[in-house]
Image (cartoon, rainbow, N blue to C red):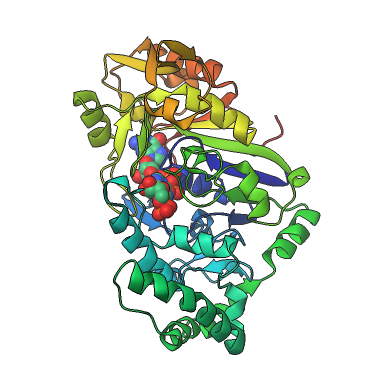
Amino acid sequence: MPAVVLVGAQWGDEGKGKATDLLGSRVDYVVKFNGGNNAGHTVVIEQPGGGTEKYALHLLPSGILTPSCTPVIGNGVVVDLDVLFSEIDGLLARGVDPSKLLVSADAHVITPYNRVLDRVTERFLGARKIGTTGRGIGPTYADKMSRTGIRVQDLFDRHILEQKVEAALRFKNQILAKIYNRRSIETAAVVEELLTYAERLAPMVRDTSLVLSEALDRGETVLLEAGQATLLDVDFGTYPFVTSSNATAGGACTGSGIPPNRIDRVIAILKAYTTRVGEGPFPTELFDADGEFLRKVGAEYGTTTGRPRRCGWLDVVIGRYATRINGVTDFVITKLDVLTGLDELPICVAYDVDGVRHDQMPVNQSAFHHAKPVYETMPGWWEDISGCRTFEDLPAAAQAYVLRVEELIGARVSAIGVGPGRDAIIVRHDLLGED
Ligand code: GDP
Ligand code: IMO
Ligand code: MG
């Protein structure tokens, strides 16, 4: 099996980290291809002597927890070097060896001015803010597109770095001072800060697209792991309430240098209900006791910012859209266990927009903003399912729920998460197998 892409189907936090970690021991490379430390992946690993270890990863690919696998930060990622080394040091302190990590020479660097600009822009927008993670993600991708960005490779040529930072700041200091009433930032301070990381970074830096291409030539397996998700994608998400990168399967190619014809499987992670962090439309959002139930039982608080996640019922219009945009071959439904104990489980199968039924995402964003969910309701179950390891172990109502979702989203459900731990999963089709 050559290259496999793993994406989020909804608005993030579907459990991508757990799924990547699960496959980690069977793949040779795990590549993060988009985003930066706006991502937050929680991985819970059962210990041989009992108990669990919990890891929260932001910038590092989730494959970092698997010793046999080489983690790669691809060219599509934006890298905060301070966060990179803090995360590496945090893992070293816990006995995890991150020394195999490779970083693309073409990845862009989040600079101190990009972090400042993210926060002041959000404050300036006030009620119209995006609700970003404040990590400098948007401004860094904006610099990349406007060709004023700083790349990892620039850290190894002081002269070039100085020139580029100076050119960027000439413009940004005007914005900081004249629009946001902020102090200007000194070129030398930025350059010196970035250069402090150069020596430690140097051994990790590669042409990662070449490394991955050679690995595929040798028949090795590469897992391309998305940050964020389909509806946070800058092209296909709920723009402008999105992140600034391509989090869908297409981004796996441009963010890693692996061409489309080497990818033969696309796994999408779909939470059994829906959550979103930050602002933006969310048709099935719940403001009642059921929403509170999902937040509480699902522990829906952001891994990165700690913000409570907005919660709502499963929306298969989004699921179908994710199938189409990503070319999903296999779904993993996560957090089915969280639905235990609810009398009824509504599934949003279409939207009502001003009396007109929409089975697909509406063309215009404003229609999506006031789309009313059309629900189909399935019966719930009360049995604890966290110990189930085969599909047949699940109560009949839980099986029916999964089968109905499978039918509605238009791609097979190959695995089902029934708890946060590595083992808490039901596998119906091997995600890396030939069938
Ligand atoms: P990611 O950003 O997609 O990697 O997801 P997050 O880590 O931000 O959020 C998913 C949360 O759900 C994490 O706390 C996981 O430990 C947890 N989780 C993942 N799969 C399951 C599952 O099947 N059941 C339960 N109860 N928790 C899960
Ligand atoms: P993972 O990988 C959920 C959201 C932010 C905000 C919007 C833009 O853990 O699924 P940004 O800082 O990226 O410019 O913020 O995107 N967002 C996420 N929401 N999970 C994430 O990542 C997210 N990364 C960004 O809350 O609404
Ligand atoms: Mg997350």
